[in-house]
Image (cartoon, rainbow, N blue to C red; front, side):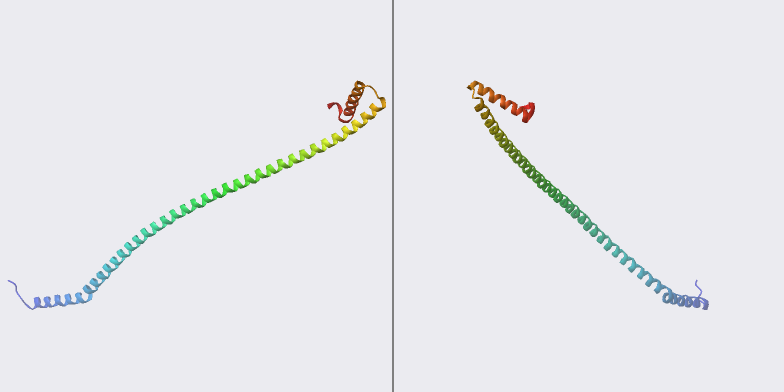
Length: 166
């Protein structure tokens, strides 16, 4: 059987005192530290979950912003293309108008030059006619001779003025 003596009682008392001291000094601080560590870990997990959700939200927002930026960039490019086409058409239209104006100006100049040449030719023909008439009157030949004389005079006169081209 169990023999209860003073040493056993002393050992039980020592054990209970040790247990009380360990509970007071070590066990409660360890439990407190474990509880604090658990709270810290739970808080960290909650923050990590919040950060994960926030990161997901930020990722969606950034993807949306990238999509909007691409749409906006495409819109700007389309507007630039349209503006370029309008500018091209305006430049072409101005070039056409300038070309038409230059052609009209050249035609007007040609017409003026033609009219001046015709006026000079008329004046020279008048001079020729007067000179031919003077020759005819001087010689007073028959009609056939007058015609030959006028043709010869015109031929000689045009050779003098214009060379062999006439």
